[in-house]
Amino acid sequence: GDSVTQMEGPVTLSEEAFLTINCTYTATGYPSLFWYVQYPGEGLQLLLKATKADDKGSNKGFEATYRKETTSFHLEKGSVQVSDSAVYFCAQNKAAGNKLTFGGGTRVLVKP
Amino acid sequence: GAVVSQHPSWVICKSGTSVKIECRSLDFQATTMFWYRQFPKQSLMLMATSNEGSKATYEQGVEKDKFLINHASLTLSTLTVTSAHPEDSSFYICSARDLGQETQYFGPGTRLLVL
Image 1 (cartoon, each protein chain N blue to C red):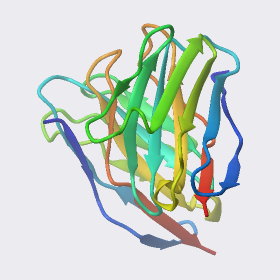
Image 2: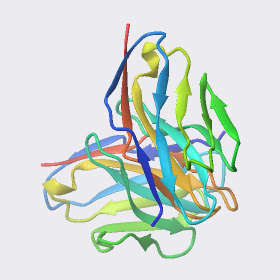
Image 3: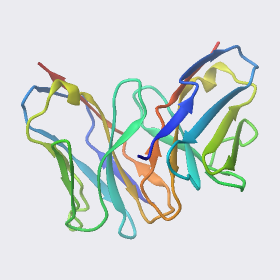
Image 4: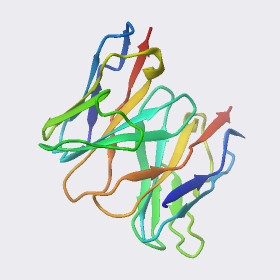
């Protein structure tokens, strides 16, 4: 079945470090891919998305490129801030109207 | 735009009582709403999908008589945890999506503690 796998955390970084969170998916079709962020005690916020191969989603300095050949959607940020400390979830949605399938989440802690 | 609210944000109740959680889309019409449950430091588990005006579709293993879902309008869905027990304590999150759109917008979550 469809699934999403992302690297386990926690990931601990210093401020201004480079962040990468790996995400791979399995799907029978061509899903849309998402990154959501969850700050402590809050719900999920959509961070970015990509709907087809080679699309790049970007927001708030974060980027992720839809790689069909490697079935990946890795999240990157060039210079993290303490305020980026959160849990990041990768997710896929096979088609409009279908359910989201989430990865396990990756906790990121950025230290000053 | 695309704001989803939940009420209450947290609730403490006694074992055996029922608790109702509301999920509202504030600036769009949510033809579909989803209810998730999240345990500490874990991912979201989809409980059910509800479409406005029809019965909710529950995921395998989720008791429909335990978790009553009503989606009576295009902006409101409710989840009622009936006869709550301590094992129902969790973080409940809803999301909403407009017709033909694929992006889900999430509410801030409701933390339930059953004593």
